[in-house]
Amino acid sequence: MKLKEFITPLIVLLIGIGLTILGATFKILHLQFAPQLLLVGTFIEFFAILLTIIKLIKIARNKN
Image (cartoon, rainbow, N blue to C red; front, top):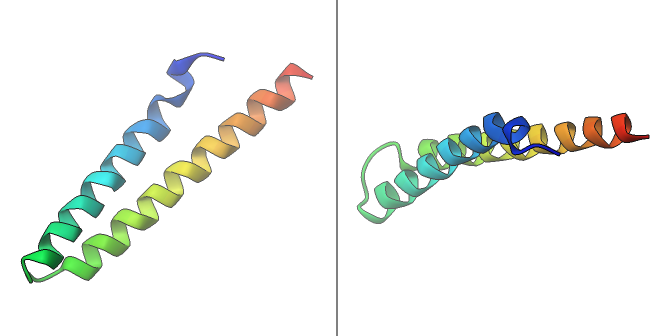
């Protein structure tokens, strides 16, 4: 298993984490668009985890 296969999901996950942290900061400071940032960041993190699971399933199928 090569780490290069997981670069895309990792980048997507980091973007999602960044948006979630930014949304939490906006929420603490009572700025606009905080709920939207939190929602988008969480969905992007979910998508990254889904990409990783799909990639792991493909790798497991190829080994058999």
